[in-house]
Image (cartoon, rainbow, N blue to C red):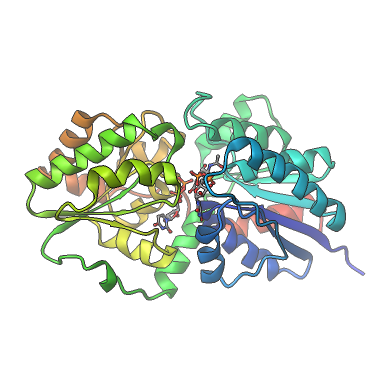
Length: 370
Ligand code: UD1
Ligand code: UDP
């Protein structure tokens, strides 16, 4: 009988789920693979909404999220609980995604268990250990223990090559484009419940990064308040991340202001519709920066450094940081300068062609010689 390769995909947060579910589906179609889905549930509700959208029931649900959890308890829980499952199922390969604690620690756990590791969205770097925190170090950990690295861009490939790693590096594009195209083409959504005013320009805001907690997030909120007061033709929608550190800062500043809608996190399909409808997106999210150029919406990134410089080079994204002045002046210029707006919204997406999952599947087949 032909060899069957046992592949366990391990993920736990919303963005990992969005970027891994299309891969779960693709690999499951291949009879040479036995696919096992393990979720740490580092996120609970935000993970479940993605699993439901892609109709995936995990084989193992570690159910680890705790209210306002910290990096220490999450790290030790993931390390011990993944070991338990790896010992039981003995996979030939595990796949992790990106830079979360789930990715970093599951990879370390698999390394301790001498299991082969594949890193989806490998090679992103700011080269500053503190930004984004702790994600930059998670990426370095995962790439240093990986056997296969699936890089979204040439730049990501170079970053890994420059670190001295010589084998297992592949350029595949980012699976986020596979997910986005699938949802935009197949899922109809209705945004009536947000009650948007069709006569106003919509600015979509998301911010949740740890390094923005406190003063930077306060600055972002104050800048938004100022922009809404000055521009009577805009409305802002902010789907608030469930992290209490975000909510406790944002609500006292922005709640109850006219033309600012603070809403619950959106399921992925309505969120894609909202991105598409938006005039400008302000975000510190990684995934949103990668998606928006496909939808032709300019993105202003609320961070000082980025591991995703490609879309900036291609013109669809600008790095604005978190100072009140820089945010208000850059948004105002984009509202007022039609030529600049057109230039940004017509930029090409550098993150892939929507076939990353297919490329990853082929690379795994070749690696195991099947
Ligand atoms: C995590 C990742 C970050 C990623 C982000 C995506 C780490 C260290 N951080 O940050 O890289 O960009 O996810 O969103 O891995 N919560 C809920 N329900 C949910 C999700 C979160 O209630 O479905 C609340 C809980 O109180 C939880 C808290 O948010 O304890 C923080 O979750 P956590 O995953 O630790 O941090 P994030 O800020 O979400
Ligand atoms: N997203 C979503 N609903 C929301 C906000 C974001 O589905 O209310 C999606 C978004 O399209 C992207 C992903 O979640 O694919 C990004 O997740 P997040 O910003 O939490 O994490 P990051 O990408 O920064 O790690």
